[in-house]
Image 1 (cartoon, rainbow, N blue to C red):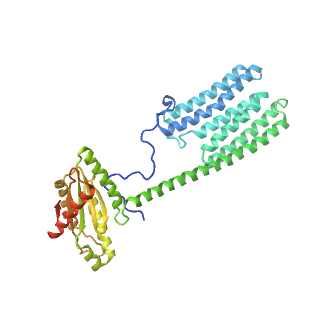
Image 2 (cartoon, rainbow, N blue to C red):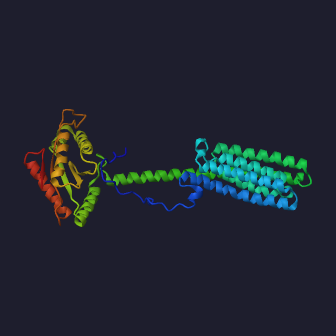
Length: 387
């Protein structure tokens, strides 16, 4: 099981590189907005405008060749532009958030298919230029829709174009030659399902990579916890506490920031182990760790120093203020049930408290704390002494 969360402690260093808090400046906020998901949706819509641009050129060319009237070409271009504008405004305003598909992906591909099919039917000898646009629209749709909707829209496109090609052949068999249309239909009916399968494979691969990345993040976090926490109590371990003490001592040297160190030792702990067994001893250690979490201040960092010894780093506290915290902990712990297996068992601790002096090394400060702890034990235990 994972070690208990370290409560009330100074935040631990990140187990792996994190992204910078300050994100790179967003571009085109006037067009795409600030919210990340909205920007993604609108970016897709902008990409979907590219086939429309090509289709517009086809419509203009058809009007120039006399295949299509200028009024009809204008109507087709304007209708598609208005549909894209409506979709953009729905996304940009946030109005689309009320729908099951807030990205309006399904609506976008349906309108694109209907417009492409209409252009195919009306563009005469230019009709084959619409097939690549159909494939582009479907590629975007199948990648961004869920598997069920992607399948449905693919078969809708196949059936739609089957009907359009058949109708075009009946209307004008000279321009839409039946044999040519049959060949185009075979190509279209083969490419669209193939594109669907490829998109589904890419989506599965993307999902697998995302899952693996999350598993790696969890594993790295777990390794970091194991490297910085004591597994039994969930407190910071000696290695991590040593790093934190060095950091605070350096701050003390640089700017005079005061802090205190409290070295604690459970009284008669060996007797508890010898009398009741190591299982009960572990329960006492856990109970003491829990008492520290609930008693020390949020800024304080408790750690298991080794065996039945613990250490508390108390930032921005002189020795006297630190003593008040330790006395509160002593009174609280002395009244607690420390072992569910032996409810009548009570425990206490002794503590030595020091505030590092100017020019003092960490080893010297810890030695003074150890001397103060020894004095507390010599004086009868269950007390705190200043060093």
